[in-house]
Length: 83
Image (cartoon, rainbow, N blue to C red; front, side, top):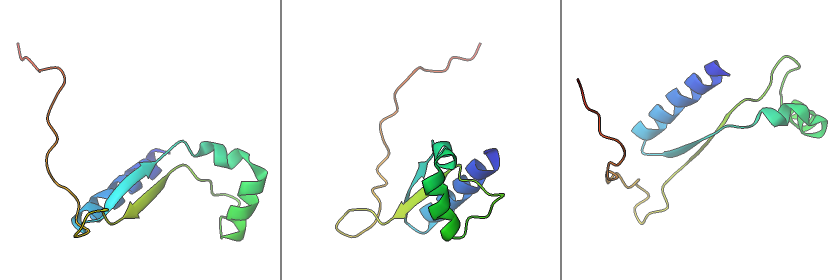
């Protein structure tokens, strides 16, 4: 599962460089427990020794020019104090 997370993170970094939005989709382990879904995924090419542990949604921003809004969000939370 850690390998999947690392691979998806790298895909998200590449997507950002291409001005694509991305969203990591986790909590997919339950897909491996549903025989109907596993059968469908096997029809799509999933091998016997493979399982799904993460996914990635990619797309262009829903803005007039299709570019992502890169306005920084306000920072909030606890301040860090060094002693």
